[in-house]
Structures are given as structure tokens and as C-alpha cells.
Image (cartoon, rainbow, N blue to C red; front, side, top):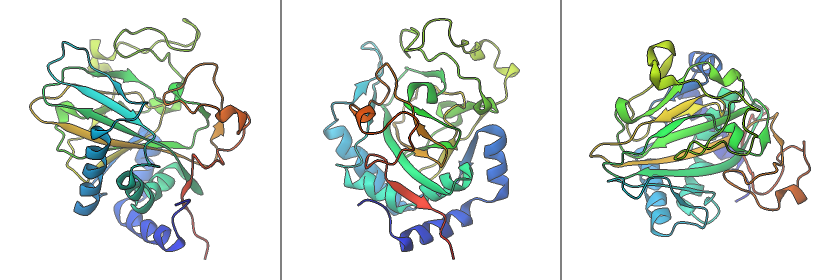
Length: 286
């Protein structure tokens, strides 16, 4: 599959219009994050769970354990499996997710960047620290959007949180999650994140309790974090979307995820027109 059919795009667009409107687009523009309730049907949630189950049974070479050995739980991530995981592919290409991303980004077209599996098993203590996503990537541009969709109920205490308004910048120093080492950018070249946990009341922190089928959409520069989990499992499929103004920005370091050899096929500053980043949605003209 290279792109959804016009019929699929039209159906997804109609579904997206039933779920979001001006209020959600304005909230995304203002806060850099918005919750969409009931995005996925029960069948689509089942497809997401099937995809995660298949992925967990055979992680790719890109998978990484993101929790410490002494953690009583287990946190695993994996990336870029949509081409081999049919459940991921069906959900990404056939649901209304890309249509919603396009409307929130106010973009004429939406391309897939990659999908990202994040599973925290019961009693995982490892937190996902405050960070922005875009400094870890090989892209430049403002029209970008990530979707974070849990396949299990997520309490407010364990959900993804955001500092509203931080998507307007600046870029902040990306650091390794477990050792806090500066990554890629020279130490001191970017400002450090503020100590948000030292005084949470000083920041406009937003987040939502979520049920399977709900999803959160956020800009790749919006500061976000998540706590560990209690007795429940937290299986999440995240999908990253690219809009009209996104351009390739080859880095001198290994990005997360990496796209080996892409710099030889896609020049610096070029639109992301490449089979790795297929078109998922576009505004249909009458």
C-alpha cells in the first residue's frame, strides 16, 4: 500500500469532522496538545492490540529497553515496523488519525513519519522525563503532529502530560533519559529544560485520563513527560505525522529513530517525498 484510496480518505475525513472542530484546532494551536475522545472503534483498538502483541513477540533490531534492570516492571520501545506489521499498517492507513492530524496541523497533506511502540508493564517505576521530541529527529518545520494512543485504560497519574504552549519554542537540550547526558548538540548550545517537577504549579501542565479508543495529539516541540505505572499494563501506539512545511534535516548523529542512508536519497532541505514516508491523507478537492 502506497497511499489510501480517495474513498478511504473521504471516509476518514468525515469521521474526523465528527470528532474535532474549531475548538480542538484552536486548543492545539494554543496549547500544542489536545485530547480526542473515541477516535478508534472497538475493532480498531483490537487491531492495535494485535499489532502490539505481534511486535512484542518479535521486536525489531531498533527496539530498546528503557527501564533499569532493578526496575520491578519493564519498559520497552520499538520503532518503524509498519511495513511488516499489517495491523499497524491497517490502523495507520485506514483510520481517521491522519485526517485529524492534518486538520490540527492545518496542512493540505499528511505523510507518515514513523510509528513508535511504548509498553510499560505493571509496576514499572521508570518515568519518561520531560522532553521535546523534535530535537531527536531529522526534520525541520512547524507542521508536525504526534498521536499517543493507549490500548489500555490510563489514569491521570500515569498519563502523558504536557506543558501547554511550549510548542512555540525554543528548542531545548535533548538528554539521555536514564543518565541525563547531553545528546548530539554540544553541551551549552541549547538551553536546558526548566526543573518542572521542582514546582509544578509554576507551569500550565495538562493531561487526560484515557480509555482505549481515545488519543492525544501533540506538537513535536511540546514539552511532555509520563510517570511510571501501577498494577496495570500500559500499551501505547504512537504515530508521528508530517505536514506541508516539513523538510529533511540530516544530522551528524544517529537520530531516534535512525533512517540509515536517507541523506544519500533525500537532499538536505528537501520535502519528505520518499517511500519511507507515504502520504496518508490530503484535502480532497471537489
